[in-house]
Amino acid sequence: MEMVKSIHADIIKDEQDQKQEVYQVSTMTALLDGVYDGDFSLGEIPEHGDFGIGTFNKLDGELIGFDGEFYRLRSDGTATPVKENDKSPFCSLTFFETEIVHRVDRPLTLEQLGEELDEILPSKNVFYAIRMDGAFKKVQTRTVEAQSKPYVPMIEAVQTQPIFNLEHIEGTIAGFRTPQYANGIAVAGYHLHFIDKDRKSGGHVFDFTIENVTIRICKKQIMNLRLPQTEEFFKADLDRADIANDIAEAEGSPEKR
Ligand code: ZN
Image (cartoon, rainbow, N blue to C red; front, side, top):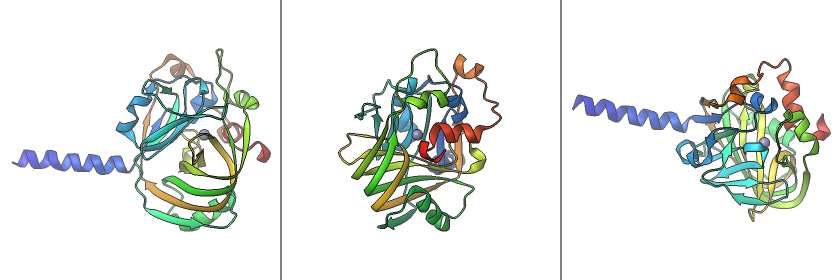
């Protein structure tokens, strides 16, 4: 009886831990160094989350998922459901459970919203999964184009990225707020992806202006880091001197550089 009890307690503890967990596949520094092929199969997603963002092998599209449904947003402006044998070199997944709800019906930009959320969030030193549903006056996105070998570093790969200015559009933004100290594992600050209401287009979010949205936030106390078991990752040079600048150049809005 004692034995059964303790196994049961362990199972409950594991489930609670997993709800607190961001499952992080590979690192942002690896992407910066051109490690664009990973060994994480998207068929494994349901074990690690029902919500998340990331990219695909060859940087062929942007990943967004919520409510257990995951999509590939491509540079031709299309969105298609992910396939089980798709692979990702970088993604962040979690099980989303709403803890904080915040409604905004004023034209806030990403930066302005960030300042407002800083007043609401209990700490800037933990991770948050963030979901926003509603209408936007504007969403500026990009989707990197599929890369071919030999791969160039991400800063070069993004030079040709198509940028979309979507206006008066309804949809969903999913992503994470990561503490500054974890920059390089993930992207510090807000890393968000967008998909429109019709599930037809979207991408990596540079900026937006809100019209009327509901923001749902879920605090995360655990990061579970899964590193690729590939030659490219093992040999990559990840000891970068100026990670913050490189990440800003690879993932930030071109207008703000
Ligand atoms: Zn992104």
